[in-house]
Image (tube, rainbow, N blue to C red; front, side, top):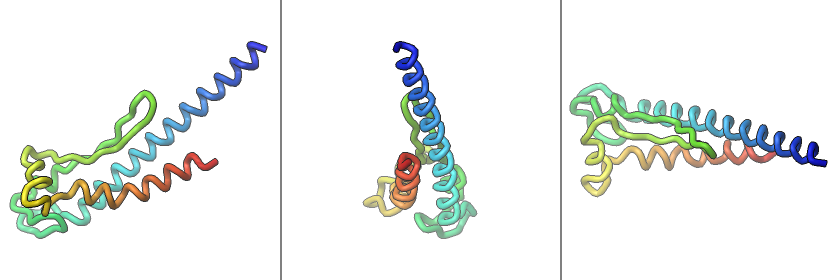
Amino acid sequence: MTEGVEEVKKRLREIFNRRRAAVYALCLRWAAEMLNRFRRDQPAAPGTKGKFWNNQTGQASARMLTRAIKYSDGAAFRMQHGVNYGVYLELANDRRYQAIAPMILEVYPLFNQELKDLYAD
């Protein structure tokens, strides 16, 4: 009897670990996708006009970062500025030049659908 319970526990742990790895892989994919979409919309060349702001030096665009993070019970992905004045781009001027929130709003529904599909079986 105990052997059967232990086997079920073992298989549940295996399923959990496979799903956690799949969610992390999904986060890696969407972090890269979000950065690619940002770079398409906001070129880093100095003096260019992008979707979010006009590049004066190109540093803010070139140093935008995304990453996936693995936790003990899940995973996530995020986007952040690599320049210390990035917070001003996001919050100043009534958020007119923000880039992170619009990018998240663009990719989250797509990510969420893939996440639902992962757990549909």
